[in-house]
Structure formats: C-alpha cells, structure tokens
Image 1 (cartoon, rainbow, N blue to C red):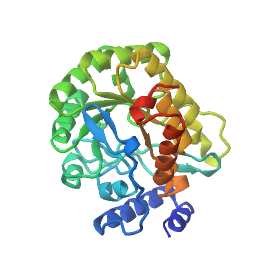
Image 2: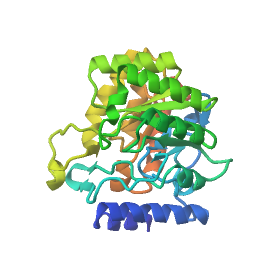
Image 3: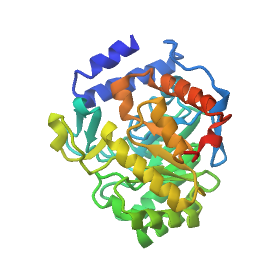
Length: 344
C-alpha cells in the first residue's frame, strides 16, 4: 500500500505530493507506524560521530520535513537521523509558486523554494521529546530580508541547540540571494565564531554547496577545523546542469537527485583530501541505493543523507539501503561503519 501511494503521488503536482507525504508520515508517526516497514537492527551500522551515537549512518536531509512535523514517521522508516528545516527566526512564505519541478526521466528535482517555513518557534514546538530512536538535527538559516544574517544564525543556533542533538547552519541554498557569499573568507569565519559560541555543548554542523572550486574547498576546510565545527555536510543542490532529458530541465533553482551524484562524489573527495580525514563528513546528493551509500562511506563519509531518492523509490528505500550496507560491510571484512570510512 505504501508503495502504491508513493507511485500515485508522483502523478500529481510535486509540491502538493510533498505536502501529502508529510501529512501521511505525520499521521503514521502518531499512531505508531503500523505498516511494518521499519528495518531490522544491524549492530555493525551503529556509528559515533561528533560524540553522538547514531543507530545507523543513513539520515534524512533537510528540506523534506521543513517544519518538524513528520520526525516520528521518518524515524519509523528506519533512518538513523532526521534533519528538519531549514528554519528561520521568522516565518516566511518562500518564493512564488510553481517552485518545485519533478524531472522524472532524470530521477531528479529542481526546487526554488526559498526557505519557506513556519519559523523557529512553531517548528521547534513540533519536535518529539527525548528519548528518540535516532539523532535529531535542526537546520537553521537566515530570513531573506534579515538586516544582520549572522544575528539570525546566532538566534537559530541558540534556540535549536536546546532541543536538537546537533544543529546545522545552512549557508548553501541557491535560492536565497547572497546566502552562499557566507561560505567564503572573513564572512565565514565571523559566522562560525558566532555560531560555535551559540551552540554551546551541542555539536555544530556546517552545510556547504557542491558548486565550489579547489581554493574555496581548502578555505572552508581550514575555517571549519579552526573554528571547531563538528562535521561538514557536502552538500546542497547544484546550480550546474549536467545533461538532462526532462521537460523542466531549464527551470531555475537547485538541482537534486541522480544527476547530482558525480559532482557530489567529486566534492566529497575534495573535502576528504582538504581535511586530511580530520573532520567527519556527511555525504548528500544522488544517494539512492545501498551500493552508493557504501561507496560514499568508503570515499570518506561518516554519515550519508538522502531526500530526492525517496520521491522516486518510495518509503521502503531506507530498509533496502541499510540491509545492503550491512551486507557490503560484512563482505569486505569490516565490523563497523567507522572501519570502512575512507577505506576506498
């Protein structure tokens, strides 16, 4: 039934389908996830990152559950972590519709949402209390019209750190003008210093774009290590356009899904080299199978996240990925995810 509903949703407007999916997951979480698709537990998949014990390395990327409504339902699919958001201090509607485009022939999506969300207060109030079956991340950003974006991030981190297992600062969305400028130089260092102080004992993650050159990768790597950032998430959607077949390929916005995978792999390798393995990395972008997740782990990722693949492969995808990663670890003689990180 879950697979049938997933296929049916793909025939409607993508933003409407997204809303239905969140509504279904929210209801499912409230009634105890009775559909029986939560995965088995795999001891070899338990992994520690930034002092947090993740039951497995597969998480939900920010953007799927923007407002923290479906956390329990997403955990019930078997994810080891759920990252909500992006939440901004004040509610904002985002960009005009249409702003989400399904590229079915490419197994991809283009979005130009623009940080649409209900705001920090309401979003954080939606979150389930501890204990939770996995790690909860809160992804925070600045309002589009903020006079002081660093102040917005400081507010977001301060408030999210009180309820989250980790907080992510998102400076990589292509849909908020000027936001990606915070990824570079003095602006990045000022932002990191303010957010590290605001986070206190809660681990702070930084999410960056895949659209970076070598010098920018090295600068970000130095800044994050110097500041004491707990992990880097690589990365967000891309403004680049590989060869695409779908009618909506020319739409503006960030591209995600299968066509992003080659770029995401290259950027992961770049950051692994630039950090020398000294900083945990979280791989995002085009991960749609256990084999791909395992390849990113062997390339240096301690954790992986997915989002777009769920829209095309349905709610059983996490279960398949976890089983395949556990099988591949055993095949290669690894007793834990940590043993495989960077082994490729």
